[in-house]
Image 1 (cartoon, one colour):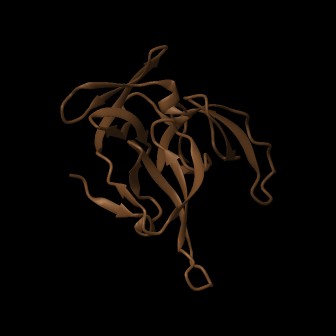
Image 2 (cartoon, one colour; image 1 turned 180 degrees about the vertical axis):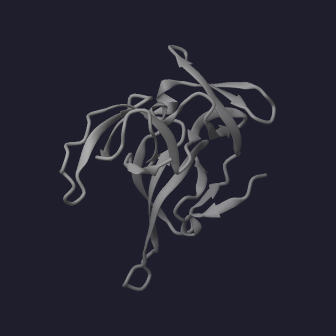
Length: 190
């Protein structure tokens, strides 16, 4: 039997199961009452790992959640088509398919062979976790204006996956750059 987690013990970046659905806690806020006899409440900002929906919900401190049957496996990105995105499990060499809904905007960060963490719930793939930063090649960018070096001047750069970011003037076409997957911003040269 899976372990039970009390609502007050749920912290940021934890996983828990509610109504046979896995959730990821994005933020937890505990409010203790000032009056005697009041109940301690826990407000969770949580992401449904199946639908990717994000919402807030308040629970009593003593409510219990099951620990989800989540497994994280290393997989490499193969390709995407109308049927979804295909990944190769690095341990079992099985091919897993994620629908475009499960992928969200993650395809903008994936190039062939990229290693990611694939989430499985009850043995079925449900989503993925990208690395903190990815390396992508600049496919197009305008040349920087000569002498325009004051402050932090940026220009638009389109990467090999179609993602557009603001990059410093010195970045040229064909260069590899690091991009933060969380903020979608330039994070340095690769």
